[in-house]
Amino acid sequence: MWPWGHLAVGYLAYSGVRRMRTDRPPTGLEVVVLAVGTQFPDIVDKPLAWWFGVLPTGRSLAHSLVTASLVLAVAYWVCRRTKTRNLWAAFAVGYLSHPFADVLQPVLAGQYGQASFLLWPALSLPQAHPVALSTGGVSSDFVLELPFVVAAIALWLADGAPGVNQFLPSTVSLHREQ
Image (cartoon, rainbow, N blue to C red; front, side):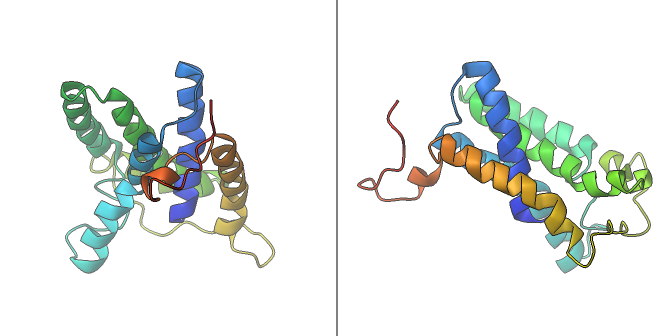
């Protein structure tokens, strides 16, 4: 899945979780932390595999739920001590949505063995890249991710575009009055 697909899936998941727990949309800072979480496995694994040759593939160490459990335990400890558990939840949903989004296409194609990276190193890594779904010449990644991206943009706008104000001058506000 491409970065924007991961961001979309993570936003849809976190906005839903946040609304179920608090009946409010995510805050700007939560969205920024969520965005980092949705990209975290690739930020770790891709450079270590492709540039430095330390990892066997771009979906191994940080994509593994074994590693995720350790990273999230440390992050929870830090956020608990700093009384920012809402930020831990944003990071955790973003992080965990990433590897599961990566297995969506192979699972839909019936290639269940492609999901073995989720339990690496307990399970061996997949030997080959997944076969793309047949989409009549259009990238299967695009076809799979487009509905998530469109839905996430619509929800994000309905939520008041949280996170934008973290990067705009204080005189510009896109936050809706509540």
